[in-house]
Every structure is written in structure tokens, then in C-alpha cells.
Length: 357
Ligand SMILES: C[S@@+](CC[C@H](N)C(=O)[O-])C[C@H]1O[C@@H](n2cnc3c(N)ncnc32)[C@H](O)[C@@H]1O
Image (tube, rainbow, N blue to C red; front, top):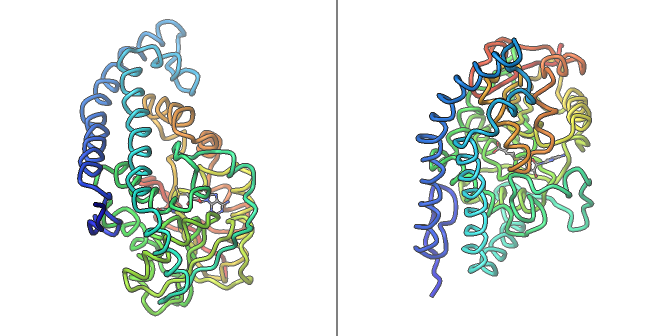
């Protein structure tokens, strides 16, 4: 018999113990790749780079160079196969385990839609743009939007992806708690873009309990799950289905806007439109904090190669375009001024900027 097995962190546990054990194994395989295989690739890459230099009279620098240098190495083939299989295995099993309780999990979303604290708005007739609807990001079957359980599925998927190190939103909390406050200290309203299941959003509410906190995402299952999760955390947060390039909020209406790992998942043209929207909805003196993939100019040879593998094997068709541009230039183009902290290029990659008063 299937019973409610409680939670792992803030996420519903797998429906049966055998699913959880399987997913723990898959998480371990992912960990094993990073601890055992990637260091071998890194060591082997040094010799391969010397061979490349002997052939071409220059070191490998571009993505094409990285492919030529590393792609034929047996260790590269092994780690690529492990990572791809791990990704396929966890999605399949997460979907299967939650399917066993589908009516109950959907009923929980329906109940949350009508409950508070906070709110959620979404449109069953929403038309998703092609650049989004035609890709399965991270090879998640059904993407973020087509499976009504996608919020649950994505949450467990990220647990495996982060190898258990994000069960309590550690990454999103760290980001949210480091966002600079506007110079006048006023924080009445905040907006989190492409909020997914609302982990940065709820962290912003914890940091600024008096503020009106919003999270938007294009995918209905994401904002519905985000709202259910916020209710369970007892946090009064507002979620809405909305595209980053078409923010349906008035001019100058937010003190802080945040976005964590979205721009590598949209075409550059959409990023540029979204940045114009951010500059519009921020009030003068307001702060915009973004975190996303590391720029190509900062990647080493193996990092460059793995970005390529991620693009072709992990549903990231727009990432290479994003990492080839300078975000600081894009922010300046829409009138936002870079702030201290964003130029340190520390991990994870962040850009802080403000709207001039
Ligand atoms: C990698 S997830 C973001 C994760 C989340 N911000 C976090 O830090 O945990 C990308 C999210 O962007 C959303 N998304 C993709 N394109 C979008 C768009 N044009 N407007 C709004 N959301 C979008 C997806 O539905 C998905 O939930």
C-alpha cells in the first residue's frame, strides 16, 4: 500500500522506500563521477593540451579546441555516459514514484491554489513560446510545464542533481541573503524571476519579512508547487505565471529584483528583453541581483568542454550563447549600474547592479 512517507527537506519523499533507495544510489553515482572520474579527466587534459599545442603551435582556447583536445579520450566518454545515464535514471524514477500518488499530489495543488498565506495566479490557457515549449531542459520529460506534477518532479530532480547538498535550499538561501540592500535601506517589495519552485522567493521573505514578496515563472506547475510549498513553510508570498520578457507589473514598483540561473535557458534576445523589463519595474535606487553560468572567458579547458557536453547531452541549447556575452555590458545597455561585489567573479557567478536615482 502507498502511504505518505513524509518529507525530505521541504519535498515530499518518494512514494516507496525502494524508490528512495534507488534514487539514493543514482545520487551516489553522480557524486562518484565528480569525486572519481572528473579529477582523472582534469589530469589527463593537461597532457592532451600539450599535445594540442605541439600540433597547432598554440594552446587550446575555444570550444572547438576543447572538443578536439578532449572528446576522444576514453575517460571523457566514460564520464559523459555516467552523467547522461544518471540524469535519465533519476527523471524516470522520480516520475514513476510520484505517479503512484498522482491523484493525491494533484489534489494538494488544487487545495493550495485556493489557500493562503500568499497567493498564486496561473492561466490554464497560457500559450508557451516555442523557444521554451520545444526544449526539455535538463532532459526532464515534459519540461517544466507539460506535466502537472512537474514542480514535484523538478524538486526531487534537483535533490539528486545537488547530491543532497540542497535539501534545505542552501544555495538559494545563500544567494538571497547576500543580495545588497538599496542604498536608502528601503525594501517594501521584491520580485524573484523564473522562480521555479520558489526557493529564492521564500528565502527573500525570510530575509525581508515585512516586504511584499513576489515570484514569477512561465510554467504553471512551477508556480503552483511553489505556492503549495510556501504555504507549508508558513510564508506569505505571491506567485504568478508570467514571462520574464513581459513583466506585468507597473514601472518603478520593486525595490529588489532577483534571478537565479535563468538566462542560460533562454535565447539571448529574450535575455535582452527581460533586462529591459527589469530596468523598467525597478524603482530608482532599486537593486537587481543575478546569478547564472560562469562566462566562457573564465572557464578552463575542461570547463569549456563540459559546457559543450551539457549543451548537447543535458537540454541546454542556449547556454553557449549566454556564456559568450558579457552580462555587465548587457546590464549597462539597459541603464543599470554595476555595484561592488559583482566584479569579484567569485563562485557562484553573480552580478549586482542598481538603477540610478
Ligand atoms: C533552472 S530553473 C530556475 C531555478 C530557480 N530560479 C532557482 O534558483 O532555484 C529555470 C526556470 O525558468 C523558467 N523559465 C524559463 N523561461 C522563462 C521565461 N521566459 N519567463 C519566466 N520563466 C521562465 C522555467 O519554467 C524554470 O522554472
